[in-house]
Length: 217
Image (tube, rainbow, N blue to C red; front, side):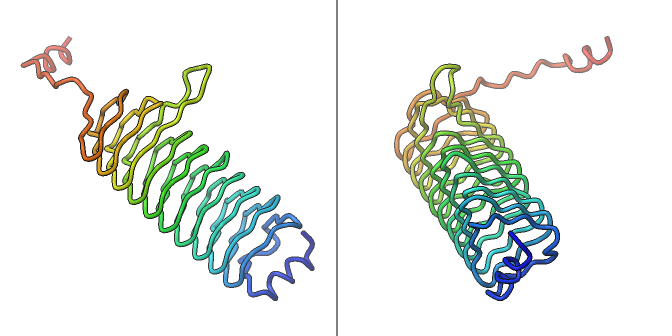
């Protein structure tokens, strides 16, 4: 995009913190009131809505971004983020992921071919691949959908208002019901019914004095 194109966007009430430090493809559209920070690359058929903040170190290609979205240090390709959502820092959305309205996607989160429902949250350190996530779902830290067995990809379905505890592995294909709870540290291999709790972990055993003996070897 030429300096004239940048000026055209400025005339359309798009703000560039430093126009010399952005790369914007000729097919990119940006809505009025949006702010583009330095070190941002926008390519392909990317479209950004109104009143968005695209913070430093973002890379978008063929990304659709709704109104009133804030995105920080994130890579988005062939995917969509709907309005009133925040993403990043250091997130990666790819392969036809759709993040719906009023969501929170935090740091070090990767979504691949994921449909993430309204009002759902995934705060940090998570991989969701080939999945359908309902509305108002909480995804804890360290959750992984185990979608690939070395030959085939499998799907995970998570119902509305489910709570997925931290450090849960979900071995696809599996369905987690509405209002279901997955206990932290579980490896889930079977469906969990609506309203049920899935827990799959061994009981803790404490060996008296073993810690001292080991450390004193």
